[in-house]
Length: 247
Image (cartoon, rainbow, N blue to C red):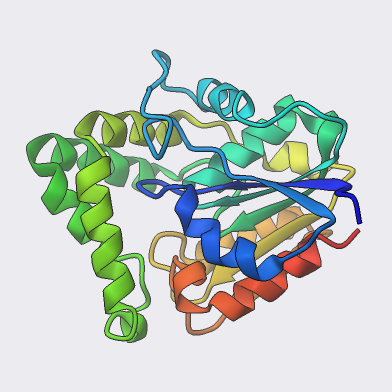
């Protein structure tokens, strides 16, 4: 069967497109063409735009997606989802569904902005120490021992591949990103969320307002999961992706 949809998977902060590899292999859907662009400063896109804005980062992502007439299903993890909410404004005529994977469309609250400013300082002082602490905090406490090999690999890879400049620029992008909830409230395409009940990065209780503003959205909550569902509950994520890709 010929492909009739393009699935655009955008990885998260300090990650790379390889986070999607196992899920793509298991999807095994010949009706999909899958694109896994790199966020600037990450993966195969080490260049960082001069302007540290969501728009400039999204423009860099779009350049990595082949031109064709296929409709897009866009799924973003964490920072990838933050960027997806701006990307779909730029390319809304192409969008047929969007998925926020441990992510959201809303802007940061004041407290989160202060956290990001502290992260910028920490990355400038000792980026490896910052990366190790930040990534350990992405897993639910109950999953740290079980997922220790994956966590160790994440930390080692990030220390090797992620620069202080990348961290600082990405935090600045996340601080300044626009709130896209109002735009999505009138979106003509389906909106899907996958949220972790134990997520410390995006606490479930802080998502209540956004979800209430988008009553048409479907929300899946993974009970024993933090911020890394593709590691903590891969099969659950796989089933969620399959639902998103059916329209």
